[in-house]
Length: 141
Image (cartoon, rainbow, N blue to C red; front, side):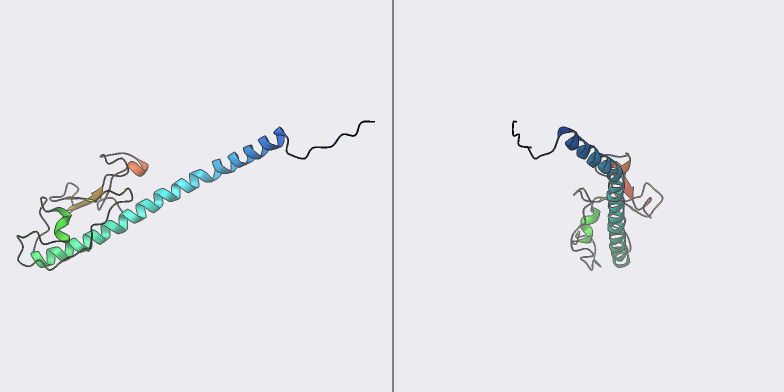
């Protein structure tokens, strides 16, 4: 009689079952996770834009107008030189969007606001959906 030692380990079938189970769990969890990431991006953008709007309102109270297009949001952090009543800085530093780009400023507004504050999204181009969507003070909640 031959004495055979039984080898310990996993069979190929067992490994495949484990991989399939992990893949199924990932497929169920991934959409929820990505939805939360986009929701967090929108929340952060809305908060940043509200902060910039508040600083712009203080600037307008002191200077009787919003910064010119050529001055941009930099006028909130350093005196642009042509304002006698500048009482800033109104922001310590310019916030950047979730993708590391500075927020855009448009005066006059293109969206029936006093001024536009916006980000072009992850792709840095106008239009898009999801993370590539443009978000501004005209469409945040």
